[in-house]
Length: 161
Image (cartoon, rainbow, N blue to C red; front, side):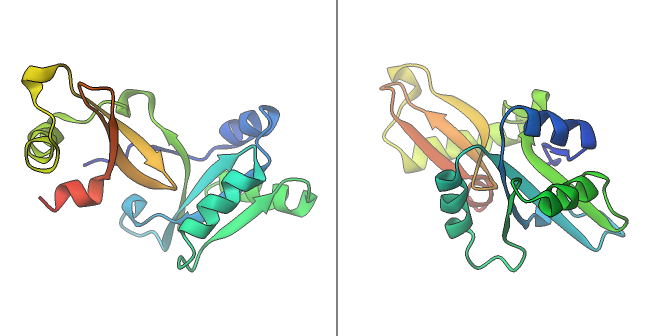
């Protein structure tokens, strides 16, 4: 599956800062690796420190984890440097490309198999929908069942079927 996240740019970073995002959680992002890159990283923006801390705790074993706090000018400069895509690094922002919200066609049979074997939902009961989301920097699928219930499954777990 192609990487559905956007590379961080100066324009995106400045727009997020203007929109009130003050905390950025950094983590490893191996899905973004390309040939010749030393490392691939992901920044997730937050307005609320509690949400940023929850994300940080979720990735507690990631050697790259860090929370940038923009009330420190030196951390804003580090974010701007990251937005310049330093040589050898790929820095992504936790924003899905606009055309990537719907699962790609090759995932549909896997999602159908998951729904059939791991849930009690049946398509005859009503509409079942799937949407690609990010949860703590992990690409996942949000499944909505005919009864209004929801289930989040990481793409990694789906691809193990």
